[in-house]
Every structure is written in structure tokens, then in C-alpha cells.
Length: 372
Image 1 (cartoon, helix red, strand yellow):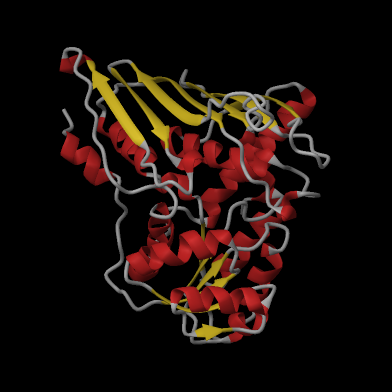
Image 2 (cartoon, rainbow, N blue to C red):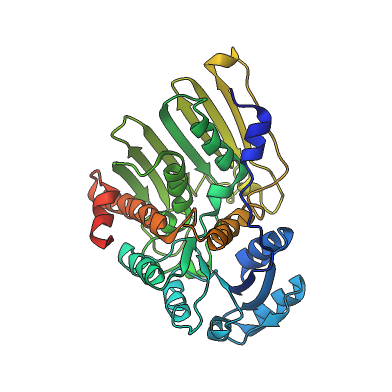
């Protein structure tokens, strides 16, 4: 049987030995200002410079966090060959061109950490993956929910065999996201921006499913045109495992005068045990740790309830950068590599196609034409 201490230890990522990687941040919005940079500094890593679409924004973030250098443009930072690691945090429709520019440097970068989604199509994302591979640049994608402490601890629990064979996994989100202005006009709203977290989590826990059945509808609160606001999906595995996600960004009229019932809950049921948890993110900026409870047949009704102080925002962002730095240090493949991320993008695409056609879609069939 696994112990509470083993579960609590499993929540933490592997860290690189080297502390002096020279990191440059493309983007200075909320996610960089409040998550990336604080997480990196807490791990002892140096952010050497920052650039933003508006130089004044980069100046403010550099002053707030003591970053030594501000660049007048994204291109100026990219061309600084002192930068070893590029941390890209810009809208997904802008990200591919910046990565292409970064690959033109005379002195190659050691690694690139890109935001999710890597691109808004499998074809464009696959092109970036192949280009980085051809040039020997390690590409990782910032799937930070994999480093939420309860999600990571649940993965360890699954690998331990404590729960037996998985029968059913569910993730139920009732939360109201803040859609950034850049999300208006993209070909997808919830699927590629919100559901991508949960779809990637199911992949992290269980692997890529063999079929997807999905239904979507617009969110009444979101005023700009969109197809996929509220997403419901079922993931089928030939092994018999089933998983489902309800991504409800409406949650009732909680902002229109009714009472609130907001939260994210997950559950994994196996042949020998079960685990359940909560995600603390919806209460941000209040720092609420995610939770995990589990039980198994051998425990005679006992529930084990490990706890910790870390939270998803910003502490999980240590893990997403760490997995890239470890890969650079060991000359290995990042845990969340660009190639691995293509399967998550294919899963997102399968959700959209299934919702449109009202048929089951195999995500691997969507990905296969773009693999070498």
C-alpha cells in the first residue's frame, strides 16, 4: 500500500541541478507576471529579460520582479544570443510565428517552452514540432494542469496499482473563466482554451482515447460569437476504460443575481479502489490548495487524505519549466514535449469534430497524416 508521505512527495516535480539557465520571457501579461516569473524565482532560476507587445508593460513587469533587461520588441529578445531558454506566453494565433523567428537565430536556443495550444491546428503545430526537432531545439508545451498537485499525486496513485484497473474517470468543472480579449475571433473558444486542460489531464492519467463523443453549445454569458462554450465529452478506450468531462463555464446565473455553486471536482474509480479530488483554481487569487482523498479494498473503509500548501497558480509553473530544463540538462525528451502535445491537440480537434458531426471520432486518425 502507498503511504500518505509517498503521495505527498509525488506532487512535486523533478528539478534541474543547474540554477543559472538564462530565461527570456516573450509576453508580460497576467500569466507571466503572476505565475511564470514568481514560480521561476521561487525555484532559484534567473529570468534575464522580458519583452511585450507594449514595451511599457514589459518595463512594469521587470520593475516588479527585478528583471535586469527589457527588450523593445519580441524580435530583439529572440535575437539576444545570451538567452538560452525561450518562454513564450502570447496568444495562440501569434505564437507560431515567434517560434519560427526563434529558430532563425545563428546560435540555437537550448529549449522553448510554448503556451498551450501550441497552434490552432494540428498541421501548424506539427510543422513547429518537426522544425524544432530538425534543429535540435527542445520544444515543450506548458500544460500546467499536469503539475497541479492533486493531478500529479493522482498519476502516482494510478501507477502504484492501489486503485486496480481503472473503470471510470470523471472531471466536473463548474467555473466561470475570464476570457482574454484575444480569444474573440479564434476558431475555438472553450475546447482549445479551457477544455484542453482537462483533455490533456485525461491523456496524462489514461493515455489517448480511441474514440471521442462530444456535444457543445454556446455560453449565454459570453457575448461574442462562438460555438464551443459549454463542452460535454466522453472518452472511450478499447480497454474498456471510460472517462468524461463536463466543462460548464455558465454554472447558472451566478453573476446575474443567483447563488453560486462553483468548483472543479475529479474522480477515478478502479477495480480495487477509488480517488476523488478538488482543484483549487476557481478561488484564485485566494490561494486554495487542490485536494486528493483515496481509499482501497485493502484499507477496510479507511480514507487517506494527504494535504499540502502549494497551489496550482503559481506553484505548478515550477514543474512546467523544470521538465524542460531537466531535458536540456540530461539531453532527454521533455515530459511535455511538442510531439506529445500533438496528441492533445488531436483530442481537442476530435471534440470539435464530434460535436459538429454528432459521431464518434478517433483522434489518432486526425493526427496520423502529420506524423513523420
